[in-house]
Image (cartoon, rainbow, N blue to C red):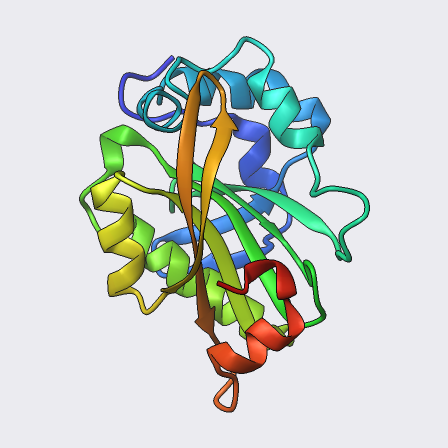
Amino acid sequence: MDEKTFSPTEWALRPTRLTCDRGRAVALGTEDAPQLQAFLDLNPRYSQIVAGRPWLPDEALQELTETPPPDWPQGRTWKLALLGPDGDCQGLLVYSEDLLAHGVWHLGLLLIDERLQRQGLARHWVDAFERHARACGARWVRLGVVVGNAPAEAFWSARGWAEAKRREGVQIGELVQDLRVMVKPLAGDANLDEYLELVSRDRP
């Protein structure tokens, strides 16, 4: 396996789901669990920060099959491999369409290869995700950030995402974490007050 990148050849042959000027993203399915697990194992830092442990041996399969709670209004959940120009895997993007309310998209995970971080990749892929969501009718995007993960908190704040609510005492792996629920309006006439009217779960 390459020391710097992870690049299953078959991923590069798949149809493009979204693009940015650093590459393109393709959809993953449960059949990709072994390859995705290898990628996760090469990038343990996120799991250590959020869950207090390395990735579990079946973490990739869990990620590929997991969806939001079935009683939540929701559209499709996508699991995308982020590929560079040469087909190398730059990261993983997970998002759900129309979660909790129509026009609200949820960004569940953005994981950039640790060897490629601090090169602006996260910014480019977030911009691409927001453009794609807006083009598909999303009016807001939301996510959860672990309180105390200072680089992540600073990154999302700098990208225009604002805290709507804090959730305290959330069990993630071996840790109990507080989460910042962050929201960003995408449509020109969208605002946080209107969002909170739609998504009562996120009201302070």
